[in-house]
Image 1 (cartoon, rainbow, N blue to C red):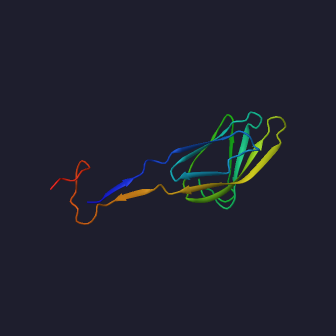
Image 2: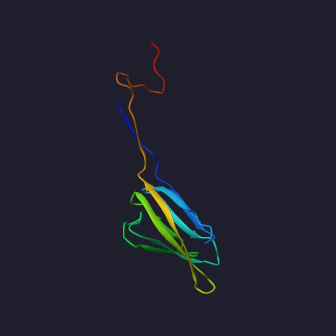
Length: 132
């Protein structure tokens, strides 16, 4: 008898935007996982993520998502693939903007594992075979 076992639920990824001059290059995630972008630099309390052709959250072209120090951006990964985005940091002092990117998000399907004992083997309980 074959057993079908799924992996545990995809996790949550927290990305803290601390210094607009040294951002993370690439993020990897699974469909069903959650991404949370937080603002970690008080000099740049607002930010935008801008995607091109598509995005992993709703598939819209040219999507723009906003977050801030007071309201982190929380999105759920719904589409598999590789996606490019720009990050725009907005200055607290004068509203000026620093744009960085492109960056990459790679989203995969959650892995599914199948276990099937070799043909002709009886089912075993407790993890050990009976001694003959």
